[in-house]
Length: 265
View 1 (cartoon, rainbow, N blue to C red):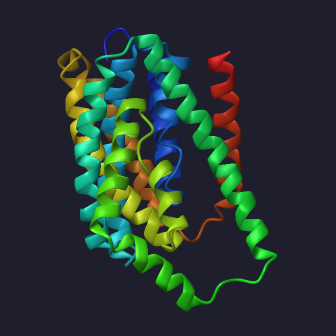
View 2 (view 1 turned 90 degrees about the horizontal axis):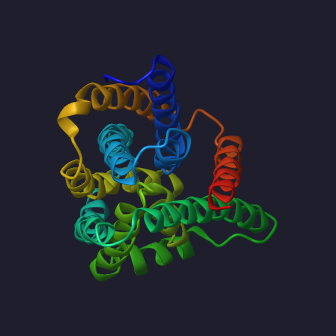
């Protein structure tokens, strides 16, 4: 970590721990990491994505393991979705090399903006549904089996989200989780599957972006990211279900929308 100030080191460590905690609790907030690196700290986009996807690899492994132990991870669904995400992630890394740095930043900020808005819209729609007559459990079960049991659907979903995430640095859960919930998957299962799916996205993305930077000269920084992010995810996922997430989601969504608009302007 030569050349980095103590303040910068503390910021990176604390933010990685905080974002990891949010991911562990509700599966969102990963997209804030590349915003931190490119916006607040001024890192090159490629460096920012390399560090972000290393963190996403850690959060995916730790978070999905804890969700699996809690019985909130559908392995069959995760593998089908993950195969598509792996293919899409490779394509996203390849596409990122073909665009300019300024375009890559713009895509990142737009994805963060849309992610924040989607969180707020989804929460608003959930409240509207609570005021109406709910579907029966049988209806929800039929809805889930009709879509998420289809390998073709899961492959297409994985390829699409994997490409978008690896190209923009969105991480995965913020896109995958709400789409699975919309297909009838329970919220807890959706978070577990999305966290496991982020591993399939992070592996090729992390390897691809690290190969384009001087990663040997930043081993200390990479170790800091792994440790602090891992601690945050572990604590967050262990307390998932015990911590009220509505306020956390609103904060992350509003904060991301404001920051994205500011960076775009």
